[in-house]
Image 1 (tube, rainbow, N blue to C red):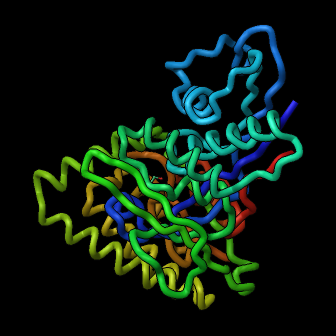
Image 2: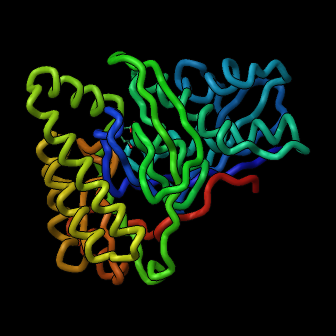
Length: 323
Ligand code: MEV
């Protein structure tokens, strides 16, 4: 038996722009996905027969990346993330699956987190029509706070580089870590799920279509990039009031990219009076908002009153682990 847990993630700044090489800042959250593997007579997943077409991520990891030729496995998945909600549930699943399979095959060999993040990124790219940044997979593998960018980012610790052939050509990213200052101890992230699932691949495709039909929108990407760097300096300095202001600004640019929705905007408006800042997080079109606050219970209540479902997390949880 082998069991691994991988956290979900929350993007504080830079979603969508990161697909085009701009920086994004993401943190691992307390909630995530756990995968357990046991030997079995037939391939099964959560007690049902395993179908490669229904689980392309998992199938790609088992067959193409690990080239697994062993006996059939029973795969058990437990998750406390909302799925298709911008919290990186598919990246967490890929990481937990990769980590569990690694441990199942090589109990004595340490898990290489960079290799794992790359394996999971490859699985994400397949599921997202060839356009996926390594943000979700790297945040979930490494934990803490990461910055993903097309180039080096001052004031961060470089961890690894990666690239992907996308329909728009080759993209290259640098993955960096940021140390969150100790002043963050009383600061929480409160996620609010609208209840509307929204597959990332469709939203990423929608933005690609918008840029094609309206090339001026590329300026929005440049603005998101500037906001992201301002938010990052504020975060590194422990200036959470300024982090919140940058989150608010980022939300309005994501509205310009037409990825926010009425439900997301309603939740953002409901929590702002009790938050340092709030924005949609992830691909949008549904999914979640994130608020930064010293009063997480109050924000969670406001999310519920406005019809959403809250989750509370500290700012930057640990990365993937064998359990
Ligand atoms: C999804 O969590 C974030 C996006 O930027 C897509 C990606 O980075 O692959 C929308």
